[in-house]
Image (tube, one colour):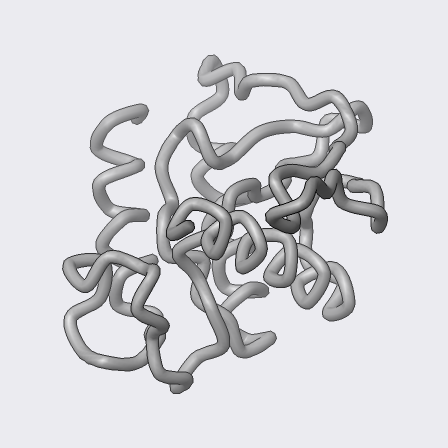
Length: 137
C-alpha cells in the first residue's frame, strides 16, 4: 500500500510542478489504474545525460533546482538517475515521489531520513545536489 501512496504522490507532484511550469517530462494526465487505484503513468521517452560538458550541466541543474525552490517545492531525491533530457535536449526532473511543497508536513509514506525536520525544505535538495556534483563532475 505504501508504494501506491508514493506513486500517487509522485503523480500529484508532477502535476503541481507542471502547473508551475517547472521542467518535468510530458506525461499522460490519465494514470494507469486498477482495482487498488493508481499504479503508474505514461511519460515521454527520456534520455540519459551526456556528462562530457560537465560545467554546462552543472549550471543548468543549479538553475533548474533554483526554479523548483522559487516555485515553492522540494524535489527530495536529486540523484543522477532522476535528472534526464527530453527529446528537445532540455534537462527534466523525474521521480519527485520524495518531494513536496516547502513548509508542508512530510507525509508518513516518505522515509523520515529524507529530511532533517518534519517539513519539506530545500536542505535535502542542496545536500543531494552537492553529492550529485561530486559523483558526476
